[in-house]
Length: 605
Image (tube, rainbow, N blue to C red; front, top):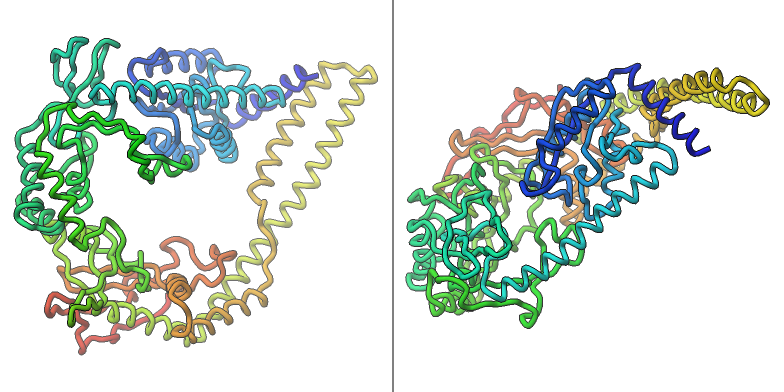
């Protein structure tokens, strides 16, 4: 019976595929260039499969040298995802086997992506795992088992790698990843004799060979020494060091060639000052992670020092241990803390964009000292690039918090007072309701057709059991199954659409608008949430000295119906009716010109 179900499923799938089109894309992946299933071998096997099954490949996507542990870190996979979601030019996605699709940390993620692609009308086929292409119960179990095996293989390999890395770290060898700024990877033989400097993308070829760190570019070495000297001996802070390096155009560290790195940042300087690599140490097994998300994001916590693997004579140091300890001594006396910041009081958090460097503005407060007591006053917004990288990356000016937030709140209150606001939302809900009812009516018709198809398939099955010609019945069942699949797809497009109670929703609108009238009595989080329902973003142009407010045409009142009032940029005011204010500068702060305050015409279009 399972074999018969398998044939029916395959026949239905192939019939539907042939009816739409017989085109495909392919996905190729390998972690390293030393794997058996290399990109050329995968491509060759996929092309043979496509030729034997009369499938035309329209495009290849590949991730060479990429781990399969997740999808987000694979640019080829993410580009393929976007193509699958936006194109109807192909039907199949051809992959060499389940492991090339991904060795996900959570095997259910592989199933998630297959289901996601199927909902987009595309079918994943594995050219060397025919059993995984079977859409019956048995086939799905086999596919799940293969994904579990791929995940388990990755976990076992990770444990083996950890033991090996720990052993080699104890011996003072570099245990993976790019060399730190100022260093190069030096390949040595079993006797410790130098063989060659490894460039980006090169790996050791023999098990008897190892990698150590050696001093690299002399300019980079001098820059590291200079950073320590400026911080410890000359008393400069993170901000001044960062700004000095950017002013002089010193090339910053980059994670890999061709990476777009715009200048130095305070976090980069901070990481160099705290890295024991620069005093000749190799430190391994320092951080721990509670879950996969933390590991992917790098949100590790420091383990007890007793669990660290440390070799203090691993390679030649760039700075002295005394200078390195001087950093820790100075930080204890300094008020600088990595990260943090007083941002909870700022209502426009995440909404302000610098039109020069496209970075987000951050909330800050000028610190004053009176009678030995530190008091925070004069809150303002300032460009994030200016804060982290200095004025030579983005020479913006600070804008007082009261100015930016006051204009936004004043404009929102004016929107609320306009009678057309509620009427416009009510009209939008009615239009959505009519569309919803029309689609729901179409769903009822599809349900009727599905019922007829199901009954016909049941009658044919019973007829075969009573002696009817099996061959004729099978052909007809395959046709009905293909029709059923088409109807199911049409139904899925209409799923989730329910009629909306216009009067109930309008009452919610008016209630939320009343909340804004008591805006000053709400807590910070509620006030910030209300502003984001009216205001899309604010752009500040420090060169033109202008500030642009972009409001929604209709405020987002209810999360459940946000699609009624927000449709990408289509819900924004046109540029001609965007609130624009002129800014003048005084004492490094932007100030609103009194003669132009709120005089710009404003209308909803």
